[in-house]
Amino acid sequence: MAVWVAQLGLVILVAYLLGAIPTGYWAGLLLQGIDIREHGSKSTGATNVLRTLGKIPAVIVLTIDVLKGVAAVAFVRWFYSLPSAALPIGLVTDWLPWIMTLAALMAVLGHSRSVWIQFTGGKSAATGLGVLLACCWQVGLGILLVFGLVLATSRLVSLGSMAAAIAAAPLMWGFGQPLAFQLVALLGGLFVIWRHQANIQRLLAGTEPRLGQQSSDA
Image 1: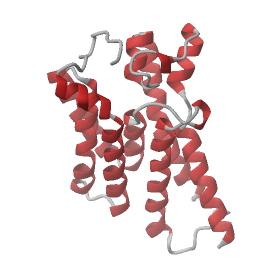
Image 2 (image 1 turned 135 degrees about the vertical axis):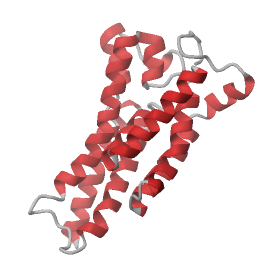
Image 3 (image 1 turned 90 degrees about the horizontal axis):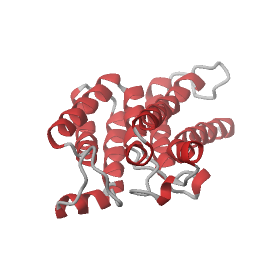
Image 4 (image 1 turned 30 degrees about the horizontal axis):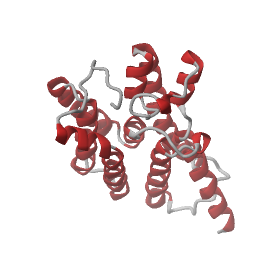
């Protein structure tokens, strides 16, 4: 049991540290010598990188942030496939989705509360997409479609991100995924929406900048 707990702790730590990689922050330092947390929305996410640094850096940051989520869940699958992994035989099918869920949530938390940058970060939408793709690629593609449709009609990245977050849990249920994956979609989606509180206030006030617009507080 002690070995199992220790290995579980290792998996959780690795997932958090993967999510905590401050991609947008590093992009600001490397490309312009700035702390991106002092510009735009103060977020380290791809949208703020787009408005602050440009399209190519934003695409790179977005891609890496998605891959962080994929890697966190993939690491769990890999680790518990090792002969030395201390997961009781016969319980792999029952326990593995729950461990993947825990790792996924830690990666999402790490992105927005990174230990490397004083527990600040982004809004976790991209890393959330990554963990969903790793848990069930059909759901990941589904929420990406929802995001794209909302973005295309509204040109509001925040609205697209929140719509995708809302759609995640129903899609997990619709595709018949385990309860654990439905839970990560629900909790992760709620967390992403919570991280968009300032955006919600601007949406209600009609001041949320649309894609392509510059804003000092977007």
